[in-house]
Figure (cartoon, rainbow, N blue to C red):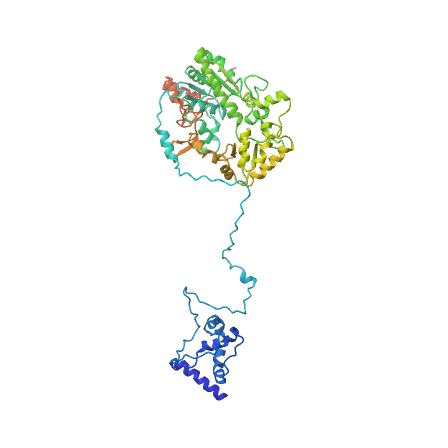
Length: 585
């Protein structure tokens, strides 16, 4: 046996030196024989003693290689019978090294897994590699129950850009005398929101508004945030197209200038508390001596008379005393702070404009002016005719959930939807309510529109459950072709971008002095023959002081004297208030 082993070792050396003369299979075939019993357990390996002795050394050397090349060796191994040498010629010896598996058409090594021995993967093998993305199968959500959305095909309509809107607005002809108030001059002594917004509406329809401001102070809404072109954004919006003159009404020179302006003025808009102008000697009774045709509009919180006439206040105070704030409370009865200045705008500015226009019409007939007394407290009460009438009839305090338009019925209410927003339902008429019930596929609710008691609570719960199944946009598509009186509750950014606002000119571009384009609130109401528009920008304090005085034939010397006296202020020139006169007594 030792002799045979030494001869086999010499044969191995000869095979490695002369691979062309090799007649026995190479190491890979030996490895395939070693792996053959694992693939086919019923077969016996070759039984020749000389071959097993000769392959002893080669098998021990190839064991480490057989582990890495096991798949390739399994592929080379034949499923049945003994391994046979190639019938023709000399067998070609394969080069040493790792055995490469034969590539498939796609270039990947094709392996034959073991039919019996299946690899067992541990928890670490199943876990993804560090940093590898976790791939989860997509989850298909089932559609929620409810009416199907009939999506209309989108129209390919091109919207005009802001610059195109501005170019169109600037090309519109501005004709003198076109607007209904072109020949009217207004002296606006008011500050903040109610009075300036009233004069802004008058200016939009042609009135020449001169803002009379206190030197060194002016309208402090200029300082409010946010800022636009160096002034408060609200001030910039409601004071466009006005002129500014700074006059100290407590000085003789200032009174002289103010009375000179009153002679050439149609309307004086006063925003002080009652008695302030009278103490300055510039009340209505004095001014009408200078100009009998003068219309004097006094805009205050509680009017010129009454127990609250001298009381200071703001928008929230007037709403609280009028009873409106209590009606704006939540379900628990806690009053809510409104996000809109209802008293300043709806009960202040708008009644002031109405009163001024009525006085102008009266002056055309009688050729005489008059005083217009505007009280925001009065106007707030006038804005609640239904609530005051119901109280007069029943002597019962209006309470949430007990009034027709105050949460009593489900057909006039606000409901949450799926995306955390809300929709408003105002289907008061039976035909609108029927459209709503049919649109949400609940015709069984039509008969309960005005059912009383517990039935209304059940109806509200049913609508709440139904509306929470879809988002606001989806519900708007459901109600797109029905007269159900259902609208989404929008935020300001979405409201100002609505085509209903842009196409009607309620959001209009304005070019500033810096060349930038700003979108501002447009003009209302819309007149067919004399439409209103806004031109110009908000003035600086005292920006037009010298120009206005020069047009009234004031000399340069007199203007300089008034400036030195501190009776007037000019923009861009430091204002130096003159010291008070000394008491010689």
